[in-house]
Length: 199
Image (cartoon, rainbow, N blue to C red; front, side):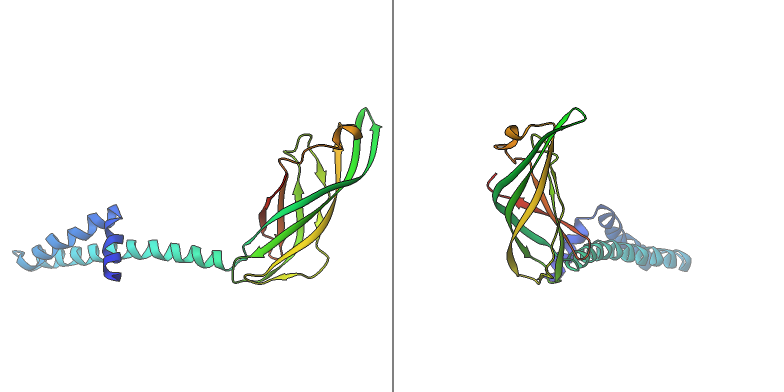
C-alpha cells in the first residue's frame, strides 16, 4: 500500500516522471555500452535520475510534514460570540461640528482550543469598521489567567464600550451590529477570528 502511494507520488510530479523513466534507457545503455567510458557515463546518469526522482518525491512530503508540524505547534481557537445586549447610552454631544455618542455592549463569547498546545487568552478585539454606522470598540483584556488546553471550552461574559461618531444618540439605539468582527489574541500573540451569532 505504501509502495503504491510512493509510485503515485512519483507519477504526480512531472519532473519526477521525466527523470524516473530515464533510468531505464540509461541502465540499458550502461549494460550494453560499447566502451567502458560509455557504460560508466550511462550508469552515473541512471543513478542521478533515480536520486532526482526520489529527492523530488521526498521534498514534497518533507515540506508538507513540516507545515503540519508548525501548524500543530500553535493553538487553534474557535468559538462564537452571542447574546448581545446594548445599554447605558450616553453622549449625543456635538464636538467640532461632529455628533458623537457612546453605549455599552454586553455579550458572551465561547472559546475552544482545537490543537494539542495549550494557551491563555490575552485580549478580545471587536472590529466595527464594517458596521453601518462604523463603531469603535474598547479592547478587552482578559484579566483572569484562563488556560485553554486541547478540547477545553469555556464561555466568558464580556463588556465593551462603544463609540460612534457622526450620529445622534437616537440614531444608534436600534442600530444593527451586522458586520462586527471579533477575534481573540492568545499568549503567543496569534489572532483567531471568532464567529458571530445572532446579529
